[in-house]
Amino acid sequence: MSELANIIQNYSPYFLLSFLLVFLVFLIWNILLQIQINRLKKRSFEFFGGNKINNLEELLLSQAKSLKLLDKDIQELYAISNQINALSFRGFHKLGVVRFNPFKDVGGDQSFSVALLNGKNDGLTISSLFTREGSRVYTKTILAGVSEKHPLTEEEKEAIQIAISSSPKKLIEKK
Image 1 (cartoon, rainbow, N blue to C red):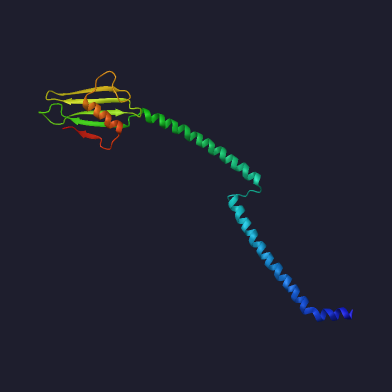
Image 2 (cartoon, rainbow, N blue to C red):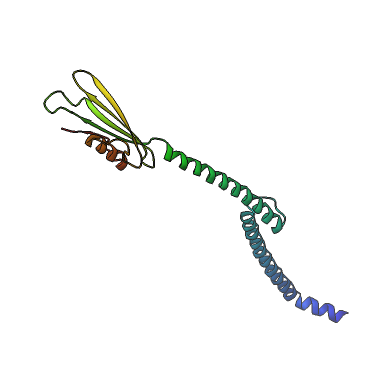
């Protein structure tokens, strides 16, 4: 035994140094593993969206439920969009106005023609002729930009063209 004790005593600094070196290697390895575990935790937190989901199956099932709800919402929005589109073709939203003087030498531009059209260029024209004796108002039905029953005056045609083109200059005065 004394021989073993003598060897241990002679080589004890080497044993201590080797154990210390092994300890440092394991310590550095442990630190690197902790860094990697923290990165994995961070990635899983981002992947699972902060939810406390234990496995991937739960995540997929919750995402499928969310997709079904989103699909339902999209279908509702699509139906509403179709309704709005249908309404846009029925209401008047195109306007054209032309003021004019029907009598070149008398009076001012007191007369006018107004075209009110929807998205399909259907609607009506309202024309007012102002004279000394009074004012007369006429209306004509417009289908696809033309009147089938009554002939249109030049001013009414111009008001319809202004409404169809939807130019920013809504009011044109004829001289």
